[in-house]
Length: 351
Ligand code: KG4
Ligand code: ZN
Image 1 (tube, rainbow, N blue to C red):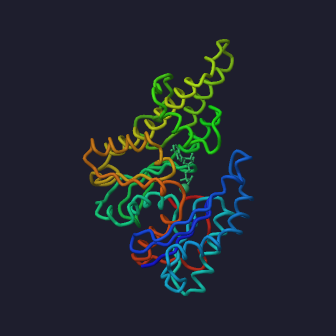
Image 2 (image 1 turned 90 degrees about the vertical axis):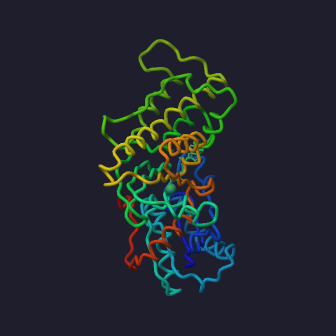
């Protein structure tokens, strides 16, 4: 089935064509340069930019795929969660296209689609044989959640961050270290500097009690701030910020942040049968932070230790894109799911 995917939940305008799990095209127009001067995404500017770009981006994705509009058999759109004004642009475009082409429309949860991105890696369904139940981890700029994945149409959220998302913590730590926006990838690069000492400082890894599958990154972020600016009310000044201290602080932050994610995965794997009724048979990860070098390494070590397959996106499909929307949309359409013309955009995830 040839499915056109549309993604406008935050600051990327994206369209993609997927056929039978293969990515035929994936076009992403980033708005980074638009928001850079404000140090974060400005919702009103984002929706206006989506409005200007969406139809040319759709046209390019069709041209890149070599597919004519009348050959499209379904339209998938990320309709939640995200910035409401941004989502509305994608949903309106998807409805108009589906209506005019007389093809089914399907709304896709953006967070769920991040988990599906790993199924598209390598241009085919090589991960299609994974067995369920699987344990899913989504780590992005806006979301940090664990999922029990019973199938691609039955996901249950087991836990989520109670404050900052993991990517948000990376971005804020990067600002504290004086790195340019968006900070996550820059902090990762710095932390990989030859000779970096990831034990320069011992930053806190939040566990939130013995049984919780929720995450918290705000304490880690504050601890990082104190390392750089000093602890309020204390006379001792922090060590001077030399180049090597900056590298070591980046590496120490990365070590603690990645550990916070791994600790919760291990806990969920231990609980296995209690949540899933069965032991987990695979680990699935997705979202912008799965591009992080240390997280990728530790995830594959964990999967190997547990003897489980790891499904993780190719680097270009970690961050927001429309191929993951089209891919999951195709699976949902094949399972008989359809959205009505009353499909709404929603700021929150469906669960
Ligand atoms: O999935 P995504 O594009 O957007 C959301 O749905 O939120 O994720 C973007 C996030 C940003 O916070 C960015 O800094 C982070 O992913 N990110 C990284 C890396 N690459 C992207 N964080 C750490 N290391 C990276 N290599
Ligand atoms: Zn995302």
